[in-house]
Image (tube, rainbow, N blue to C red; front, top):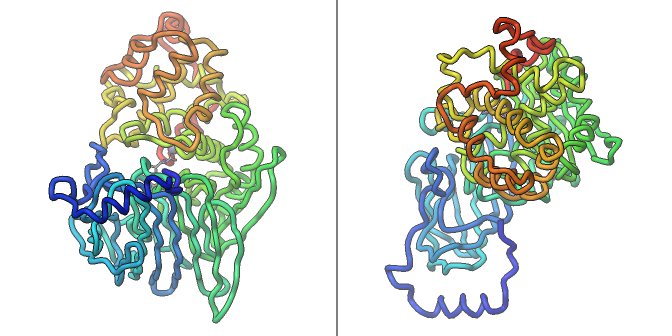
Length: 495
Ligand code: TRP
Ligand code: ZN
């Protein structure tokens, strides 16, 4: 995200550029992808978004969505045309006020050709008017739009935006958001950040949400339905807004018994990760039938299935840990997923230790021992798992094991300094696994090349670290099951 303030010199340069017809060589279409090798056509090239303003109207009965997206961006090259990632039906596009030509291409590209080419380094305002029934749209044969009996939910990874707003859909291009949603009176609309206001007229209630810190597209969420909304403030001063579908049935108590602890758990995590990075926290539990939970920024999505066996504070800890590891500090590329999932899993291990249900070392030993050397688990490289294994359990469990190995290598003082320093070092930005290694080496004063290579980049089971071998193999290869083993296993498939 770049500030939109134009230096006086830049303005002069821009008008100069406009006066001279751009040469064919320097003027080209923006790329249909941002350049992520895992997903070559995700995101787009040639511009950088600073803000999305989404003004929406949604009818749950028919799944009809109408919207106007106003996108503030800055060009990073001379552009003859540029793409947005989007699937709904577009009726009008304006670029800097002038009607622009548009067409669709590929799986999810909206190609916009402005009347006049856009010079590099200038501010651009793009208005897209659209409508459609999101549940009828798919790309690559799938849809991530979830209708519910009383509404719908957009929350998915690595893609969810295509079904409800046009975007540069990649974590590398973060932006602030105003999301304003009109829904029939009696229905609620949720999104990220702070609820600025609500208003009602002509049978429709409008909810105005604002996220004032940079946010990745996949972390932007929309939920419409009949919700009970609770508000509060954590002991540490973080405002909390949670929402529960009025239709959670037997899972209602367990959902509330878990998610109502958000404030307490945000404060607890702050002890490890530093100050909570956002102006609001919370979660919502809609009446969806799919599993999963997702770290949607400030307003976590929880499937009711997360609470089918009773309270599940572990999943709340996992998703809240992502607010630092994933949301404030986002990935540079999807190959860097270990920084998200390894640390969110490690936070669950810290919580397990806090609850007396197994220490981080016991859990690391347990993961290590429960996968024999020929288990496919070890073929996944958490540091670069490939798109097919991006969310494999190994990214989580082997990923957390790597973090325990790092802790044992650098010692607790350096380790906890890294854990807390990293979210500050890259707050509201993007970083890679290579950046993390460089940071850990700087803080610890140790070369960590071999450690990272062994635990994150080799498709084989690492030899047990010398100091731990006795503990792991001491009792004829047996490892005592930590008391928490059942809970950890139960949460494996759900986050
Ligand atoms: N990031 C999620 C978590 O660990 C997991 C996840 C991956 C997910 N892909 C998803 C959740 C798709 C919902 C939908 O919490
Ligand atoms: Zn996660």
